[in-house]
Length: 330
Ligand SMILES: [Zn+2]
Image (tube, rainbow, N blue to C red; front, side, top):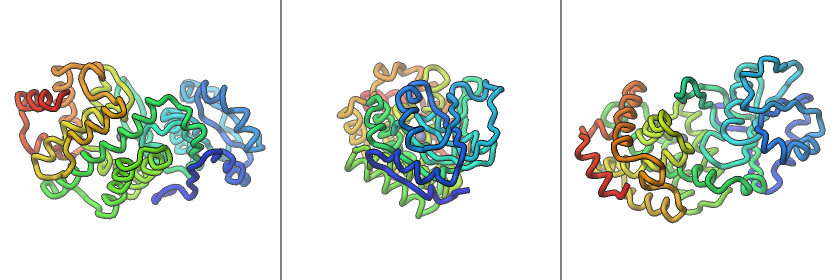
């Protein structure tokens, strides 16, 4: 089990070629993917790895009860978040190692130990193990729909909120804290604010995943802004990274008021609107009343997880919330 991160990380054009070297000690990989990636890249992947490979579509698991895993000695997650999550779950259930081969840079789970699992319309996290290697082929990732990259950026810039709230929760409620982990996530955040290229973004996502593994929980990377996104998932979910970014300015506003961040909400909003990420209710298909309801639900999620929210800290009421949301231009 990797607790400090993958042993091999390759982020470059043509990185897929590295799989040949990594897989030379294995004889029968299981590759978890989706139809689109399978159609586009399965021939290329098989040519590179030079061993027979068993394919499974992430959407068919675990419904595909006939799936035989006999002889499988390594799992490859080749695709977006859903494929990587299923690869993590299979690796966990079979006690095999898994290799992360993301085809989009859409969230910080590409190298994390945690799989997001849907059940009865709710998403929850399941602890698995981190990948043996991350092979990020930028020639493939750069061809993914642009919205996925925006979501990836969103899942990093929201660390302005999660990090500040983590510090607050530590100082006020004595939640566990780790200076080194804070530094890793903070570096990832500032690197992406300076340079939003694929390589920097992917490295930041891997580092955020590594930080959560070292710390043993998602707290450094996931505060009230994440809980709001999970609450939004109940009705109509958009990409995780777009939702967490959407919820970030309102959290930052209160974190600034509490004296826990230097980041102004406007700076993050400008970063978002410059890249056409959703910043208004219309753009993310919600409205003031529904969003306030999501925030109520988010605070319940935070309480249930024993995580202290800046909104609870300041005793924010609905009237204040509505007026701040309006002022911020939501
Ligand atoms: Zn996230």
